[in-house]
Structures are given as C-alpha cells and as structure tokens.
Length: 180
Image (cartoon, rainbow, N blue to C red; front, top):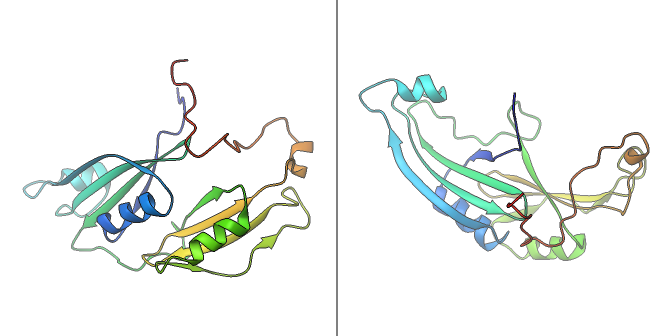
C-alpha cells in the first residue's frame, strides 16, 4: 500500500438534508459538494461496486469538519435497507469524537439543541492509558453517536510509545499547509 492519509469517513444517514444541516449548524462543518441521486436501474453495478441492492440509489454530501476531517454523508434508497440505527455495541456501530477545549461549554451547547440527547453526565477516566480524559456521549435524533472529549496536556499512554494521537489543533478552522 502507498497510503498517504485517511481521505474521508463515510456515514449513512436517514435524511441527507437534515444531517447536512446538523453538521453545518451544530458543528460548523463546511459543505464541499453534493452529488446524486445516482444508481443503475438497468444493471448490477451498484451491487458489484458498493455491495448494495442492485436497485439502490444514493445521494451524498462531502463536508469538511475541522482541520483534518473530511466526512461523506450518504442517503440511500434501497429495497432491502434496514432503517434501524445501530447501537454502539452493534457490529458496524460507530461514533464521531470531537476534542473540545471546554467540555462544560460543549455539553451546554449540545444540551440546548432539540435534536441531541446527552446520554449521561461527563465522565473522567481515573486510570489507565487515558487517565485524565473527560468525555460525554450524545445521540443525535437520527442515530449518530457523538462523543465530546477534553484531554489533559499529557496522557499516560505517552509513556509507553513515541507515537501520539493527533490534536489538539490550534483551532477548528485551522487548515494544515497543503503545499508540502
């Protein structure tokens, strides 16, 4: 492999317009482009290329979220679609974690939204490789799990490896120099 970076993460959403609005309004993401609907009503290319029902159709939006995340949102129309959002514990379940400067402020901001449910009080890891990390999980009404987290200046995992997690960025609007 000659991988250079993670290009994007894709998430299937029940309503593309609603999801785009959430990511733009709640998380200050930028819409880069939209595409679709597309499909192959007379062939099987959707099944061959994307492992979906041959009659599936999709629309997508590509968003830039923060300094390092490209997020592709898909809305599918497929005869065999399961519309039940997965739980975190389900195979294929996922969450999006955002490192925030102040967890209290972030929780207040999300709690003011009608489309987000804060699942519990913020928690603090009191031992292990992420000791000192504070977090809370939220759930957007259409099924996305969102983790808000605040990290200490240094976590214990750094004593065991020279590798580091990315972050924090100087700001949400920071864009690394792409001229290199």
